[in-house]
Image (tube, rainbow, N blue to C red; front, top):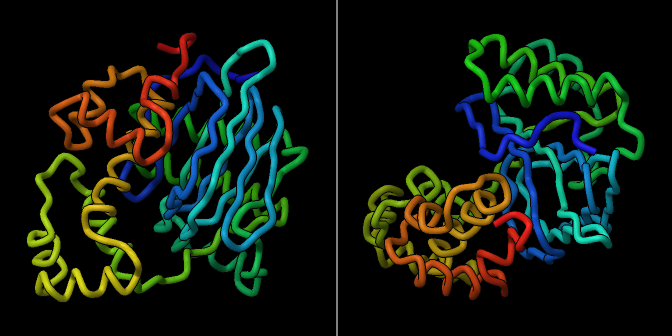
Length: 277
């Protein structure tokens, strides 16, 4: 069970990371989510199964945790309890800037860089759990960034003690990832292929050609990036669906719902279920 009262919002600080308390009212399979930054997830209720393109499936039960490396596309299956209680988990995301810490970098020098993208912690150490919760609360409080940074680093060092070093994601030159990064900076902006091309110092024709070489389009990336963030907001906040739609660039809630269902195969309200609406 959770060790703290669920804080139903996402707390993020540039250069440090983000935290969220995720709740999901129904069992859902969520496919092809891009995870750019390392993430530690503690399961409180239900279970979580994770698949990546480079590792065997990993499943975590209550009291266990999953460490995800950044720079991977992931499939999730979040399962609820038999009595209908929601899936519940606490998440902590680490900004790769933290990996530039000199002492941490010296400790992981020569460490295994071929670890799988998803790793299971069957019995997380109590000190790791305490540091994890302390860091999550810090991101939600008015604590100086310098202090918050040390608390996140503490979690990283406890993970290292468990044989799980964090490494900077391998540089990926795909143009589609650069497009995602631009869109993510301002999800509600009226993005067009032309404005994205300008931001990347390309012609629109070159942008479209390079995206086609990666079997995608600007429109697909725009929708996918917006819907991935919308999913997180549905899981980790109590914001009305209409507000979430606006925050990711949709003035029409009905149009947002159509796009969301097309992307995930279920409606926005299904994510929360009756207990969480």
